[in-house]
Image (cartoon, rainbow, N blue to C red; front, side, top):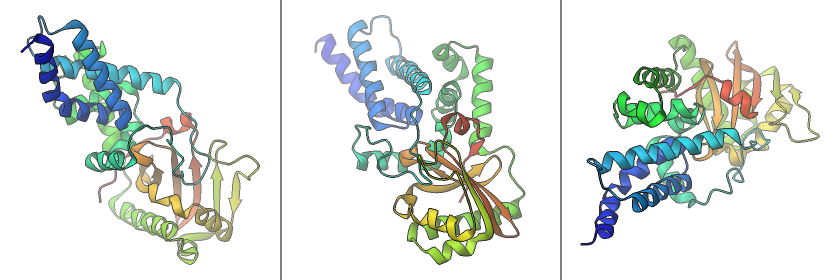
Length: 294
């Protein structure tokens, strides 16, 4: 067997692991494929001379490629779809097969993907490599060009955000979760009456500039008007799911794990009294999002 054939064989053996690493870092099957392909190109150019642990070398290479891609994505963050719920057009440019993308997202967990999407590139890489793939901090530090202690702090900070460091009291959390689930379910079913039932009569909905379509009001008051707004996007409410938003239960919309819109809810006397729709990329990154246990 020639050296090239041997390298190709070894690479194919490692491909499933490399794709798993890349997908959890990037949240996109197409981008994960690109990162893995780039690792192969680098291996085929440089060869394996002097590489004692090829699997480790490949993981390191994919991680560095993903980190560069995350930084580039962060610098050119796409504008989110201006709607209460994102429609199927969101991320339409993604080359990945939608069915494959959905299967990958389900295998990781959409809630985890959306929270990872809210992390900075360094936090995301440190958390995924250590908490998901159990890579030592010394190795992570070498990949990121940081000290092991800095890598440990990045992973710890990401872990707190993923798990939610400052939750509301358990009883309040359960009540908010039940109300939020009812709102999402009613929107998905297009049940106007059920939406009205969870809203305070004087509920106010505020949307930032990125969430409000041009020419539409950024503030709407009254249960009837707010319910109509939710009903208009019933078909795409399937992307919505509950999550912790700044320590309280809210709603995130994340097609295939990509964070597009966040609804921050205010609950008063058992009803939703305010909904803040956030779609501005800068504001999204400032939110403290965390997964919510079922």
